Length: 176
Picture (cartoon, rainbow, N blue to C red):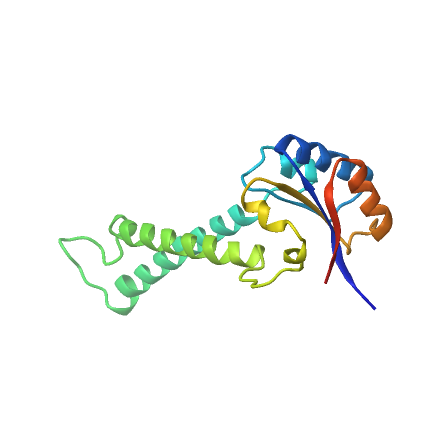
């Protein structure tokens, strides 16, 4: 028995896919995504996607960097090997600012890169959508809208008819 990943439809312009995205979410579909050659302003909202959680992940990683840098500097300078330099206390917090800043930036960058990989489920060398006959044009001049089979409202014939009715071309069922 054939299992399907979803249905994919091609659109000619950014305005057409934006309108199709609005109609799709108004119809009640929730597992919908767009594949475009450039960012289309407002399409995330039209698709019903919420804001990215990557920013919070980066902030948490940065705060962890600040905490770890201060803990490390306090331990090394005040507990493990205290040294009085120029009459200042062994742990003098203004002297820890450069190390703190650097560790905050380092952990924030790691959080951004690896968080983006995790959120986007990368690296993924193959995706079922690649079997659509014209999907390679998504990087050139065409706009695609996909509805996944895991959507509660998905019905392979009705969903395909719906995408055709809102102007989709080359509407194809994509096998998993």
